[in-house]
Length: 248
Image 1 (cartoon, rainbow, N blue to C red):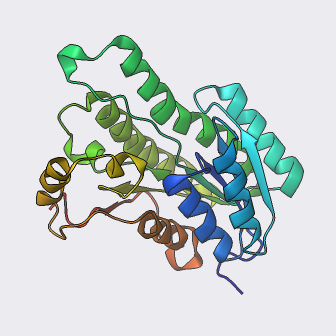
Image 2 (cartoon, rainbow, N blue to C red; image 1 turned 90 degrees about the vertical axis):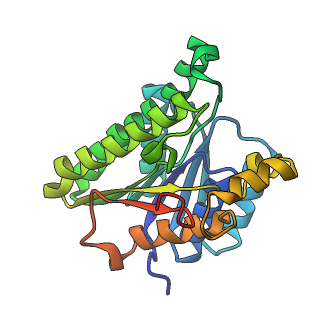
């Protein structure tokens, strides 16, 4: 039996990348998985099959996390299917990088609406359900950029710093209801974005990382499993940097 046997997990942005890795890792420990994404295309179907192969139930839902009504519908659909939500992973996020003086209002709004407001929307919708069932576990995917900043990412850094603020505040608000709220702050992860870097860009990126490599999505997922597990039952309000030493 896995450490999350029969738990119900909801992962936003779960169709690919870190979200897919987290969905699969939770499923491998016995959790039934619901995941949402902005588009339910080929990637979502692949994720459904991979999760199902772990021997658990899976539900895929389309959602625009920036819209509270959409977040509430996802939560309602998950509860209708599984009767509860034990674990929420707020993973959905985007980047629209630019220097401050070149950044458009649209680039700012899109990133803040998805990364920050999206986290708020799902925390609020799923939090209400967790309060009613007197227990739950919320894991927000932040970023080391929200801790140390990064040139060309003022919108992304602000959104992820905000996610950290949400995490710490909700940990205080919800602890009395037996709800844990923690965050993972990944560094550079081997996803579609980092794979597009040329050799010079990759060399510059890795020069800042003491371990001299990027993380695999599965390494982020392993931390999510830990935070969702009974081993972490006395941890709340924390931000775990999974960054190869980048923030040292």
